[in-house]
Image (cartoon, rainbow, N blue to C red; front, side, top):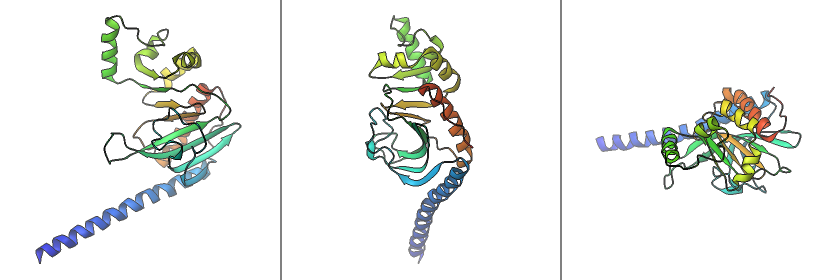
Length: 227
């Protein structure tokens, strides 16, 4: 009798977890869809926005141009497509646990961008760099902006082009506004996000405003503010 109760209880818990796993994404999609109308975005529950585009350098897109995104918000301003979406990824190789990240993406198909990744250095990276610098290693390709170099890393296969792209004005802006964020580009995409952080629907307006402001500076274009 008791083993049967255990089995029934286990099945009930498993079914409850399955139901909860189905309901939570659906509830989020509804909330995001409601926000989309308020901010003048089009909404798609599931989409493949990168098909047919160059995504070389965008490591967060683990399935390349066929990467599926969820809760897509999209609008177009002039020659720029502005997207916000959720993406599931595997942060640790060999694991089956996914994390959801909310990403702001800007698509400029007629503009060539250098491929780069920019992010804030952690404490270990800063200490290691100080040690290497003490032994005579050149700090970075942005030694003329020591404050930026001290706090941020820039990875790129085309360092000369990135140096030309990241003007002193852009570096100054990043120093003041890019804390805790990551930036990644391909030749036609700029992505801004904080890996593993999902933006709540009620915060999407603020997220769209700060990321579009950053894109306006980095891409030298004017993007409209959210409604």
